Length: 430
Ligand code: PMP
Image 1 (cartoon, rainbow, N blue to C red):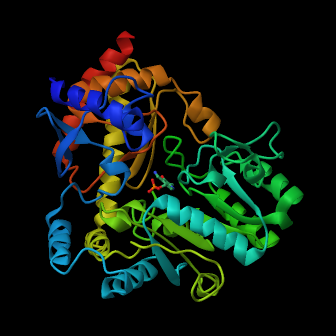
Image 2: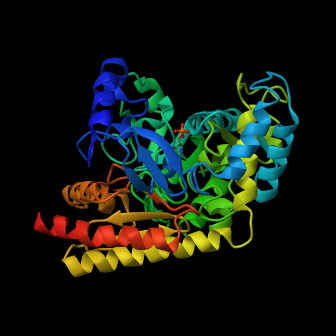
C-alpha cells in the first residue's frame, strides 16, 4: 500500500498539532507506525488520501452505527443547514430530541444536551455532587469517562486509599476525591462502600467496559452496584457514551434491566456531529440551571444541525430488528475470528455484547481489567498491522472495543475473515 500522501500530511501535522493529531489514540502510538489520513468515508469503508480503502471497525469510535455517510443522516443535515447553523436560542429540534431520548431510555425523564461525552460526564458528576451534598465519586479501573480532571485518576497504593492523578495538571486535592474500584469485583465494591459510602456522591461506570477492550459485567454485578448505591444514598451513573443505543436500543440499562439514577450519552446521539447528553429523573434534572442552582451551560448545546443528524440516526436505529441484526453479525465475526486464530495456532478469545466486541490474545475468557492488561499486546500489534495491510482497520490499541455497523454486511464480514486468516499466520510467525 502506498502511504506517501498520509506520510506527508503527518509530517506537516506534527509541526502544528501536538503529536500530529487532535485526539491521542489516532496517532497509532500504542501499535506503532504512522496513521493514515482519511479523505472520505462511506458505508463500512474508510478511504485514505492515497486512495486505499479499509473496512472500518472503529466507526468514528462508535457514532457511525448505521455506516458512514448514511444518505438519511446526510439529507437531514442538508435540510437543517438551509435554516442556519446556530441560533443561541431554543429550537424545535431540541425538544424532539429530548422526547426521543426520554422515550427510548425511561430512566431519563429529562435530559440536557451538551457537545461531547466528556461534557456529559463532567456535568453528571457535578449534578451528583450538588444533589447529594457529598464530594467523593467512585470510578473503575479501565473505564474511561473523557478527560475531565476527576476522571484522570488511578487508585493510590492499596485499593481503599486516595486516588492519584494520571496526568500532570490534575490537582492532587481533586484526585483525592475519586475512589477507584476493580471492575467486576463484588467484594471490593462492598468494602469500599462500607468504608466511604456516606461520603460518596456518585458511582460512574461503563456498564459494558469499552475502554479496556470489551468487558461485559458478570451476572448480578450491576445489580449489586445498584443495591449499594441505593443503600448508601449515592447516585448510580451509567456512562452509556459507547453502549447507549448500541448494545440495545435502550442501551446497557435495557439490556441488563438496571435503572441508573443518571445516564450520560455521546457518539450515536450526534449522528457523527459533536453531541453529548446527560439525563435522569426529573427531580434530579430540575436541580440544573436555570430550573435549579447547579450550574451547567453551553453556547452550542442543542445545535440545530447536530440535533438533526442525531435524530436521523436515532430514527434509523429504532427500526425493528436493527440491534438483533447487528448483534448476529458481530457474533459471526467473533466466531470466525476465533476459528481463524485456532487454525493458525494463535491464542485468541473474544467478548461481544450487541454491536460491540473485543479481541483478546490469550487462552482464557476475559472479564477483568487485570486479565485484559495481561494479554499479548505484541501479538495484537502484529495483527493490527497485518489486517491494515490487508485493508481492515481495527482500533489502533489493544485496549479499545470494536464496533459493527449496519453497513457491515455478511460479505464485508467474510472479507474481514479472509484477511484475518492471512493475518493470523503473520501473528503465528512471530
Ligand atoms: N465516556 C465513554 C464511555 C467514552 O468511551 C468516551 C470517549 N470514547 C467518553 C466518555 C468521552 O467522550 P468524548 O470523547 O466525546 O469527550
